[in-house]
Image 1 (cartoon, rainbow, N blue to C red):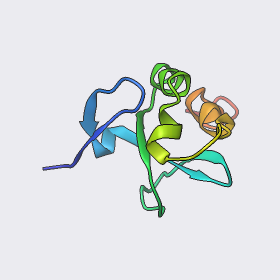
Image 2: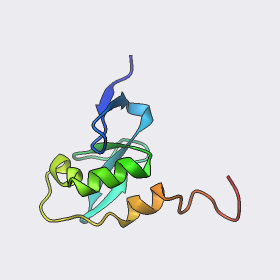
Image 3: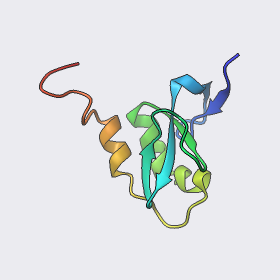
Image 4: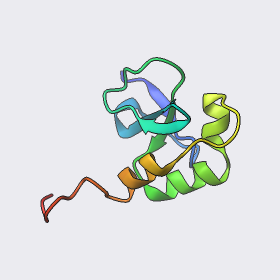
Length: 90
């Protein structure tokens, strides 16, 4: 049985493999692709709507227990497709 996590955006439950693990490094939110980086992590669906909800509710700040507002540019680029499709590739 695979571990269950809660998306900080929509608050629904999902398997660990269906969610992205997000951590903070140098006050920037980064996606932990291999899900092995140290420190606290939060989980979010790989969807723009969940990311927008999480940022709007400041869910990453609470889940990661950081003060201020971390830079979300890296994770927003990933979810908006930046870097996923290069030169028309899939």
